[in-house]
Length: 535
Image 1 (cartoon, rainbow, N blue to C red):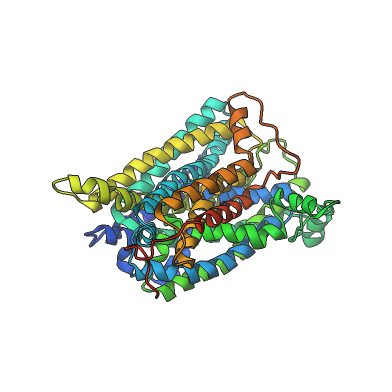
Image 2 (cartoon, one colour):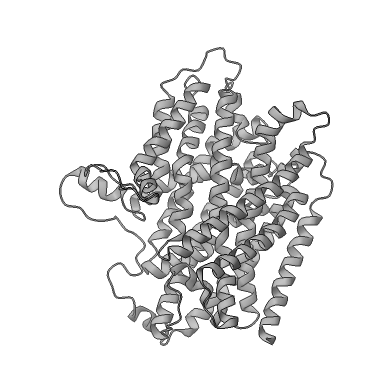
């Protein structure tokens, strides 16, 4: 019990530091703008750390090594190349207008450009999608507690026990995060993200060093186990199809990690998540001016490549390690392998540090999601619709209570996701999390691009048609109707052979292009009060 006690002290120290920093950040908060934007006084390097902490969720911390373990290559890292290009485009297209119009919720930009219906439709899409995506990824942090239970008791939990452990972990984790987020606002989010990034990166460095030391013979011993085609590769052009150009194109669109995905699909994905998602953009708007916001954003893209490579390297090293030291007790789910290694093979103290790293990634992405959800709900819904009917409206108080309410919603979604994954052991984490965004964020990006790149195209009602059309197109291409039918026990719909079943990274691309294509068919009123003047 003594070793576990030392690890527990490390965790207690971590949680104490996080809560203290978060609560200390609550001073001098008097308005929603302070709560949401921190008075635009955050240093660019802290914003950079916060962006990284939000991107590297527990899904990445355990899911990316799981991808490396399953694939034994670095092809997933190709997606980071597209994210660099996307960040440059976001910094050029979106950051300046957000600062120029002094928005708190970025969906205010759509009301300025088009009208209130576009704003509220986009805000609703964000609230629903972000809640689903954040709740889905949230359960992953509970994996380490499930394996810890198994390690300490020597018993493999049943499905119902595993669900119970996951729910307890979710409630504790969300409650701790909600406390400092509700009280401290965005300042608490950013400064705790800085600490969480330090903990996470320190843990990753130690794990790589420790794993390398366990492989007999060093590099030759490592390389000897990786002799299959595709092992250790970085580039992938996807399946080589014979036949027509359309057959080759279909193969590319049905593949997840290829060079085409990296330079095209990943660019659209990151433009959507970093340009039209309140969760990510809100921390950028805490910087003093657009130049510093852009610096933090582009620098985060450059940092992504070595970080993703490190996660995948851990997965590959884990696979080689267990080739030399087979373990019949390894979990069947790839996403559990890294957590199993942390609990069973890391030294005392460092084990606690890595568990803290898993919680850090979960809390980093959770805190900003809660802050963004609360900000968007208050700014886009409470202030226009509810506050005018109240005798003493208070946006700051409403934001704090909204944080609590969204915390409960995310726990419920995380619990439901836990049950789905527990009963489907072959589920892969990253496609689940990234796939949720794919159905709706193409519609968001299409409307934002329409507003930022044109001056006379698009209309308030036309945007609703365009967004709906973009969602329907993605749903058909991704096979969503058949998936829903199978879920209720009905046969899937017949699918033409020529129609590709697009992989999850391509969903936002098709949603964006469809939405933008339909949106430009509508004309903005020439003297509309919502038209943006030339900058």
